[in-house]
Length: 336
Picture (cartoon, rainbow, N blue to C red):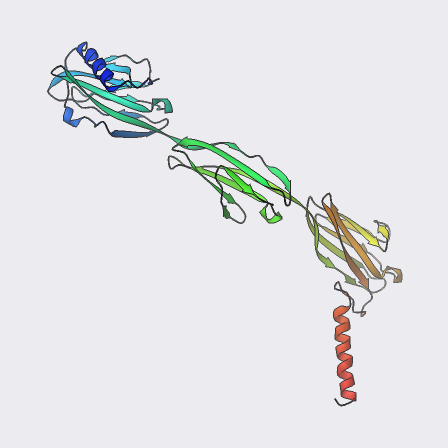
């Protein structure tokens, strides 16, 4: 590894002077083309870094150091790292190449020259960037409506990644970073949540978590039926609930079940009560009950004779129309 403790400047100068005195001459250096001490090189993890250093016709001694560790002295390699080598083009270039760069390679690198017995180091700082990576994500969960929920999305990267949240279907951006807090979650907040971590080094890392919200049944649709004697009659009851509701049918206080005269079917969140051949005794009020472990709800439905004017909303609207008709008729009789 190209790591070490950063020495103080005076110690570095002394070390470089002693080192360069041991290096045979033959590598000329053009110090005006050296990279300045403030130069930075940014490389993505896994790529190859080339730190440039050029030489000219002024013969001198050169070396590469990483902090206090000697990498090359002249052409002699002191580092044991197989990823590291020199790029030399005749006597014009003395550049350091590091393949498959990793985060521990980050730091200062010095191309040191000696002219007239005076070392002149030039330092470059290597910055290693790492793509965003989500390393810990909340698992799929099931919660009850009204409870507080915290979703976590932990990511690493260099620079630190930006974390954003989104609820899919429909797409809705959410305020949250590593942790997304949902206070009193509602049924419309169930679904697939997306966490995206990005730092512009590579394609953002994206992961998902599914949140199921349990809630008690709500009967959202019922359909009464008008049928003649001997014809088929059917009553429909539809409910929403998580978990899927169970259904029961009642006539007065008696629970009904499938028999020769009645057929009860459950299709997901709907149930149908069918009477193949309606008799006089079948007319009247029926009760649909939807339940799960969180609650119960019921609704009344009617099987009525043709022309009786009953519907799912009861007889209120029909009665109102009847009274309006009678009022108009009376007005005509008495010439009001």
